[in-house]
Image: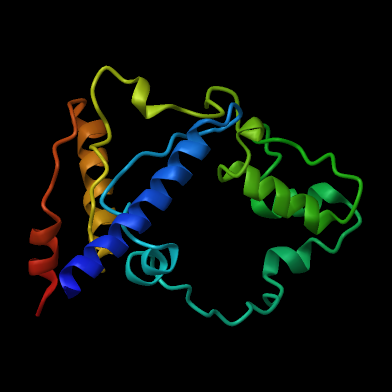
Length: 185
């Protein structure tokens, strides 16, 4: 009798989730499509506690102490900071910010390091779509289940893509399990 009650409860949860999937997919302005999957018989609470990674509590990060670059940027000349960072040397963008020089310097430094592609020097694209290559640079998404080894999945995916790009060939799936076993002392 317990099995039937449990099965009936799962059926009700599944039907409720199916209704939500159909409601969502009927929206004209949706940006993604929902479908039935291995989580369709879980309640939202079961999904959050059993599948999702719990939110970690982090202490707020205090303001960093001034660095030598920030200290030198106290000049009223915005390009003084840029010069301290090696920015504005003809290859990199000049600072044209009218406000606090250290803010300008930080913004340019962030942009130069890829934060905003529109400030990258000529010759570097603002963005790049690896899926447009003639070979596959990314393998299919993988399901780690409840394993708790997302770091190994991320490392394997990065290695798969790096190898494919370096050798200009289709990415080959690597074994996360081998990484896990090699890391155990």
